[in-house]
Length: 629
Image (cartoon, helix red, strand yellow):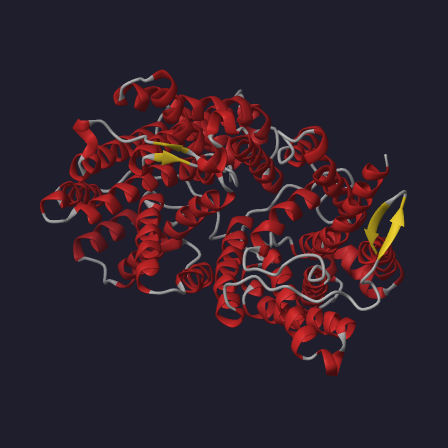
């Protein structure tokens, strides 16, 4: 009994930092509506800066002053980020905000390695809290007790700040109706900046307070951000009390899950998140969100048929790609096969986002399920490669059918978060079910058969399937089903009023996208000769979003171009520099700010401007005059 009590207190101590970070993210989202993926990066920066101040300037500042100063320094960095970057995208769709903050995260990951090095850093113990207290024969660190006491104190201070100050009243008003606050003469820019500074300060403080308990390393950001998203979604986006309750709940599940349910301990928090979103989509303490309004110039427009010139260019590009084995070596063909596979993957997500208006944050789940489907059929059933390629993606189809049924009941950021929860559930199963999936050792030896074993043969197979997948998605888009899907995207109420079963249409689209992603995963398993849980990870889902948005979500060929450019740039940067994440993140941020329509959208805009600037042809001018008469 004493052991479980100590474990409970350990969970409460872990909840302290998690609450600080989650409350900061919840405050930022509640007012600015920014889905800040870089919040984990500020947490990591807080830990690194605090380590430097407490180790190298301990004589001048002292430990506790170093913790506070480090949090303030990172808050100033957050203010600069908000003023330079985020102010430009406040009215952009959530996906563009996510993409920009993801690019920022990539940049910070390389920057901390440049400044502090790649090795883990061990911070000193907190002065005055270096001992332990005995409870029922078990020792509990006094620093853990300090953190346990800190959480309700911070919660109380935040409550007073938002309930008893004029600034807090303005923040709560902006959470409810930003436009009305602006109409009353409040300077929204500085209000948003102050809110962002507070949120970043809390995140940095959470990271700084962890240095006596945990090593500081450059993967802290991604480790914390998933738990933080879970906390704010369970508690309710914008709710501080919800963040506190959910932080305690998640931390205790992590503390006791490994003891009570060791085989599914990682899954527990995501199962809770999924259940909460299904039963109460806006979280335990959140409020139902008003329907999102569209932003001119950034909405997802209907696809249009390719013009004759575009059709010729597409066939020419395919012909050039097909002739690559005649002039390239094995390495180039392997890279080409990987690019073709990710074209399929990106096209499947592009179909879901562009035609269906459904932005999935966990699309890698179906990619990974397709890969594991190949592994199970090839290793356990001993089926030939053709049968595996035909049947393996059906596991992705099954996963999409089950998860999609629940996901399409939601919309907006809640839909995205539920897809993320399902993807993390699948990843957790693959990671912990070692007897079946091999865990982090993976499933090895999945090589293609002799007819497709050569780099050239597998390359032709990959681009052939990629061409068929993209063509099939285009055919579906311009079918009656595609038009019905676009109707549900543009107006759910109007589509239902004319007899369209909106949820059934969206669920079908989800299944189609998941199946195509499973095809990409199946090919990827044969390309790599193995399958690992990373094929289901959040980083791969974000990669798919980057490809789609980089190419242009509003355009026909955006996914294809985005996948090609992103993969080529990633592979080239890794081979050319140790700072590939810094450069790639900078490119992503630049694209979001300067070219929000993506590469293809930017080219189409330039072409339209050129056409408008050209003088009208005499025959065309004469016909227009006659028509006017």
